Amino acid sequence: CARGCCDACHGFDIKLSDQTGTVLLNFSRPFTCILCAICFPCLLHKMTVTTGDGATVLGYVQQEYVVDTPTLTMRNAQNETVLKVVGPGSSNVEWETNSIKEFIISTANGTNIGSICKKWDTYNRDISGYDNGFNISCPIDLDVKMKTCLIGASLLLDSIYFAGSPPPQFRRR
Image (cartoon, rainbow, N blue to C red; front, side, top):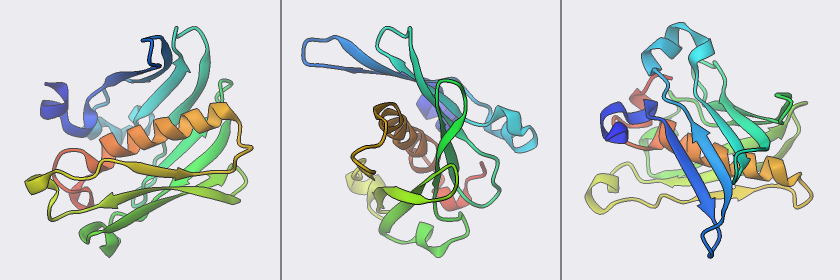
């Protein structure tokens, strides 16, 4: 109900389990009022990534206040920025076409190290459903906690920019 009524504002708690049902990871995002976030940047979207029992924080994924470009930061348990994910601008014509949306992953000092990609089909998504998969490319030696935060970033990107309607080029962050 919250996803249908609140669109990109809805909160969620996603638990990732193994085949025996043991919860390994928890991705928790509280409800965020999108209208308030425009005026109050402190109310932007944020996700906490924890171990399955919730006892250990692995990191945070936080939306940054950037007017025209989807931007998320991955922070460690001490809330220090480790990675940044930056996508195409909302005025970019690529949002309006069928293409692969690429979000660049960079380190805190700006070095590009990978990407998160999603195939976005603006015409057929309501008729036949759409591919809801993301491809994450990152260095094999990246800290596993940050890799987990990148999975969380994909979930947050999907809920903010790709789920529901209107299409992203008409959404305000």
